Image (cartoon, rainbow over all chains, first blue to last red; front, top):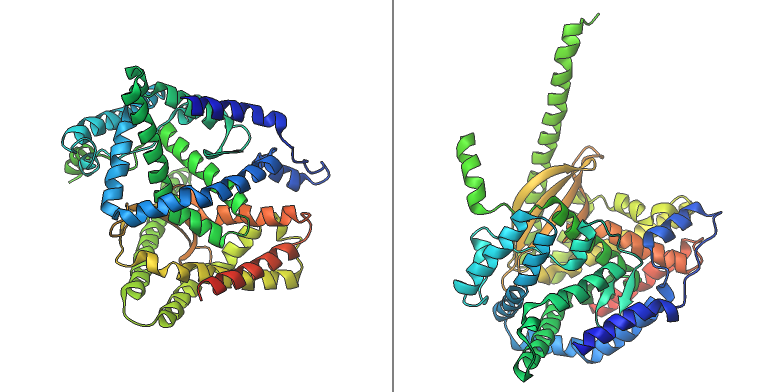
Length: 261
Length: 204
């Protein structure tokens, strides 16, 4: 899609038009270590994009998300996010396979089969109750499992907190979406835009209380979001590397229980 | 003088002893989290005025949470450069800030319940994993990090979706100090004071 190409080009060209932060001198080893750990050499530029994105979101995304939360009860919102998550299953499955995580790939496949049928096209998440919990899996995580470092922190227009690894991952996942492989035509285009729009609003609405909480309580929301994003991604990647689902499927734990008795 | 055999015997015994101690702490930590969580939910769902509830929750925070320990951790590499007066001012503001944050979230957990999933050692502390069920909301996973350093179990961190509260706030504070020259903790103390006034104003 043209928008993604534009975003990608923008992301790649950012470093060129960026103002850089000045690292602390070597005489302050602790400050320097902190600077390296933060790994945000484009901080001045990132902060500008953060401020502008916030101002834009305040008049566009936030009202839309608030309206969405107001109009639909929590149960319906969960169903919308279930359907969207189910649509993302093929890409998630592909990434589980690329990460060589058979248990997680099996979970994703079973979730897609169960929720598409018994879950009425993904409206209900039946699979979680049957011992196949959801887990995130994207190409950014795949690159991480393969050993790629995240690179410097980026705050991107529309996409928000990111890094070069996740930008590449986002581009690859978008290109790999099977709906996009079904050819072109007005129907497909409308479907893609609708999915993108609904995904954006649904995800934003789900996260709105947390986002507002950070803005209300943090002294420096930019630094707080940066830390939250990094930790969240690291935890997701660590879970993927271990290949450990959040919980053990119901059927999987039964035999061991019987043995121990 | 210990014989070689008794030494051989004692090694597994000591190992077993350490493991038993860890297992003991793990179960104590999970009991502690269950009691604390139950006490919090009882206040949240109980009758009584908002002011009463706040006072009761504050009492729980003051005993169940190692507030000063968390405060020191969050100041990180700036703790040694703070003057004794600054440390005192910071810790006092930090306590108010933490209590205000906890009690400000009262309404969010109305009708919630939680289940304890597991309890396991983590970097010298015990991590107790819970799942929080709130009507109309997706379930949330939360880890309570319990420390026994003070002799009794105390909460030193909360980890939600892989994000640690004290690590996140430490970056927040470090950023405030660094952006104000990186030498003086006073910038953070002033910012905390301002923030408290603003938050108290927001809540009316």
